[in-house]
Amino acid sequence: MPKVLLATEKPFAQVAKDGIGKIFRKAGYELILLEKYTDHADLVKAVSSVDAMIVRSDKVDRQVIVAGKNLKIVVRAGAGYDNIDLEAASEKGIVVMNTPGQNSNAVAELAIGMMIYLDRNYFNGTSGTELRGKTLGIHGYGNVGKIVGHIAGCFGMEVYAHDPYIDKVLIENDGIKYAGDVKDLYSRCQYVSVNLPANDETKESVNYDLFSAMPEGATLVNTARKEIICEKSLLKIFSERPDFRYISDIAPDCKEQIAGNYEGRYFFTPKKMGAQTAEANINAGLAAAKQIVNFITRGDVTFQVNK
Ligand code: 3PG
Image (cartoon, rainbow, N blue to C red):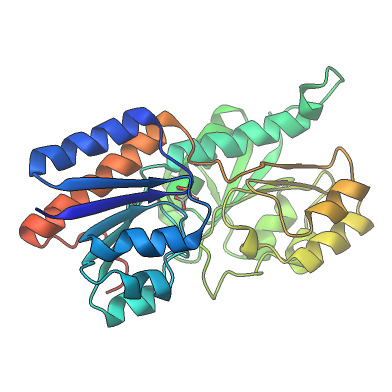
């Protein structure tokens, strides 16, 4: 009987766990839960006897990979797999997959929700501003960026997008204006939503050069990884431009400096919560469970990211 570990430091909603359990019961697999753990050693221990593992942002480093003596597949129930040591997995012939698109709507709704929250002064009863008629840039037109653009359009925002890997025609087909150059995107848009994956190319790539090009009322919205933003640049622009605001799903490392000096110009979630909805948990969790069954029963490697 194959054993599957569901290791989530940040647990899924119960309804998603029930659905995952049902899939594995039907397949005749044993499901082991490791949730809310605080010690990495617990994950290292739990992985030692399983054939497959589902994780979220849990750190699957070389130590975990090496400890997984029977491990054949790791599925990241979500989009970003920067938390998994792909090199170590590949060396051991372990397949790593993600579940692209499954939690994108939740992340996109949070991006828009946080924009409204800051624009309405944290709902404190004072007079705020509206999104309608403002310009929004989508930096990274993947699954999340596409939905952010769609919702923003419904709010009456003028939406631009830039993505070096997506054709102009595909962006324009969605009724979104194409910005061929990234600096052009930032210079046109009052709001920019960052929806890039974290990798060597993107880390610290959103920097002073881009922030400083933004027009009056510049608001940067980051629901991707904090590492994509150059924090040195962030502190510089905060100190130079009183109109600059930063919204982020999870606080930057320089949180204290921003919180202590720029009240009313930022909002940070206390924990990464873009994908924390029942729907996203169900979509990503069930997709991950099905991908494991399909891989073990018939070698299906769709969504493998370490080819
Ligand atoms: C993702 O990469 O899918 C999102 O950042 C969500 O991550 P989470 O599953 O850890 O909430």
